[in-house]
Image (cartoon, rainbow, N blue to C red; front, side, top):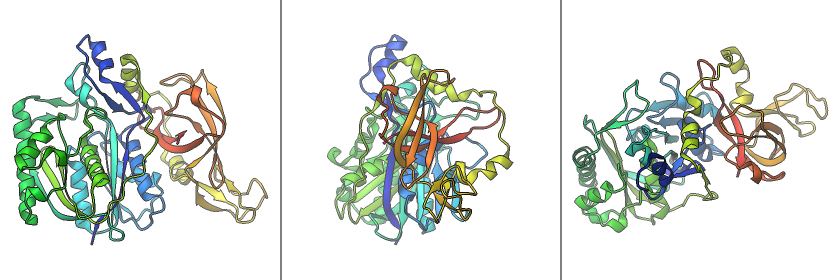
Amino acid sequence: MIGITAYSAYIPRYRIRRETITTAWGAPPVPGCKAVRNFDEDSLTMGQAAAWPLLEGAPGMAALYFASTTAPYWQRSAAGLIAACCDLPAEVATADFGASLRSGVTALRMAIEGGKAAVVVAADARDGAPESSEELAFGDAAAAVRLGTDDVLAEVIAAGSRSDDFPDEWRRDRDAHVRSYPSKYSTARGYEANVVELARALLRDAGMQPAGIARAALVSPDGRAHLAAARALGIPPERVEDPRVRDLGITGAAMPLLMLSHALDRAQSGDVILAMGYGDGAEGLLLRVHRPKPMLRADPRALEQGSYPLYRKLREFQKTDSGGPEISNVLLRREESQNVRLRGSFCPQCGTMNFPIAKICGSCRNGGLTEKPLARKGRLFTFTTDFLYEGAVQPNVMAVVDLDGGGRFLCQMTDVEPADVRIGMPVELVLRRMRESAGDHHYYWKCRPV
């Protein structure tokens, strides 16, 4: 039996208050805040951050699927790069899903039908046009689900999809921002009609009544429509998950898997969960929980982007190239093991982990070294604050990290206020986007406080 064995969510550490945005517009204040990516994040890095906790120490994955409407490449597999950064073997099947907000649930259905151990990741970092309702609403996030046959948390008892070419939200190949027809008709016709009709079909397939639904994980295009859909289905509002629009925002392709994670967190053994994705139709699952296992909780403290000009600057920073030189694919391939898969060379004679990869041990001069994955957590050995580095924000913190299990790593710090940096503080390595070249995105590892 294939089912969900683990799940994970990644929420960027930064928030911006909606009142900060509307004040810059000269408009009345709007309550709440939304999660926003840092300048060095995109949907690929957020997806990798969500996938890694499910892959660390979990061998035997057969596939990794990535879903997003804001993937950084039109022709290059983001799933393949995420798999490499998670140090998965080349035999792992990878695939990218996109073009629809329900693509995360589509990828999950495909993985379930495949019947093998897999990780499905969904992430989005959508931009709304300045002074638009979408700019206020859209938040950035990622979520991941691991499938397997051992130690199953929840099994799928029904699945289905519904296609509907109805233009309520779209983005053309030349558009920088999402376009929409925001109206009551768009919500009723595009969202509610599809979600309700598919949910009823799933209940019929499973031979169930709405009263049998313990948790309803319904995405919402506006923070309210999901309650109308639940009411039409006969599901009480206390059984409907909060989509967290007020404090996280509408998180695009990641939203269905985030909602499923919320439902799994709260479910009890034997509960049935209705999980629905929406966009150009609908995609849905009915799951029966075998045993609850809530996610491990991270430090909930968030950092605030306190001004609208800073928020816009950080959103736009990676959209212009730095004019730097291209890196040849010969060099990229030669250093993939070290720079992408994060491996060092281990000395079996003295136990030293050498990084960068070396042919001779720096401690005992032994030449019989073997490649070994580096730990991705450690402690700050030393750091410096650099006011001369040309970056999105000043100053830039350069850090030297002593990794757990050996190895010393030089990198930039991110997601931290420079005044809060302390020697000895625990940190983790995270994949981030570096400065652009004239023709490509370049990714490397930074560290941030755990």
